View 1 (tube, rainbow, N blue to C red):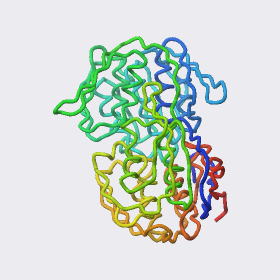
View 2: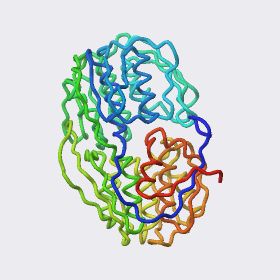
View 3: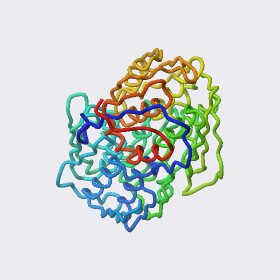
View 4: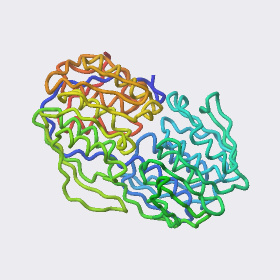
Length: 450
């Protein structure tokens, strides 16, 4: 069952052409960071287009618990009156981060160098995910962490009373780990240095600079070196959140595999550390075009048009691209099922420690739908059957993972028989308008008892 309530079985049926405009929600990564950095300012930050999914709402509640005033004005308009760097108050109750690995790890970093104690928990999925990758570097600042076996939630963090700056090389590509260390470094004296051997999404760096922190990025033989000056006075901002490319992936990929489709997804963030899926799809032969290219709030933005692409080909996805599309591999594997030939995805072991083991979850569901999948610890291959040849007809387990549920909902739009999803309730964590938006385009996703 879902950590957020009663399971919601869903059925996705083959449908006619998808047509229209898909106004997907605001970017989840930027929404989380807007709330947290707003809470670390003195003064009022205004946010437009905030994603109002469960994950982000949990972060908003957490910022209130740490002493910030977070106000929902309706229609995606929010304000945050912050407490300043180092100004977090000790929360009175346990911080429940629901399903959000991004939320809990960033919040841990933000409070780690303040002399307060906080206990974190989440739903069944989040409580099964490893936190040592964040608590280990936070310990270098002087933070203490006590959790369940294997470094899992529920977990209590005791913030460092006298934090020291650190230099940390991120062992695996992870924007969450990098961001947690940088946020902790805000309240440490001197300079905190993070070294990435492989670049990951850089929203935290861009936003820290936008809020007035002194931060420098240098490309070296060691990798990408990020240097942050500690104990700044952050300046409140007005933030317009671009629409989420990870959410856009679902209507885009659906349009590519449903005959006759033509879907426009406006105002999509195209940060190069996030746009790997679209480059991959184009290499497979997808009919994707970018219109009205521009920059908003320091982030590249465009309107993305996706049309039915009957001649998709399997490719080898470059491993170096994995960090820029790690959340999109589930729905990419669905598109690969309708391509001709093998789509090879390497260097993706991070997928095994997401909301679910996404390689395992997708492999089981794709096989049940009649698609051949081969897999290893950090790779998998999907052998496509070509347009119109994917049987479907399976009931798949979402495993409390919103992206697994949505990926199989997309698949059911173009299989020969409907796809059934045991629980679609996790979709609300990141894309609460998914069902309605897809229905408006012409999809047939219904809540069911199957």
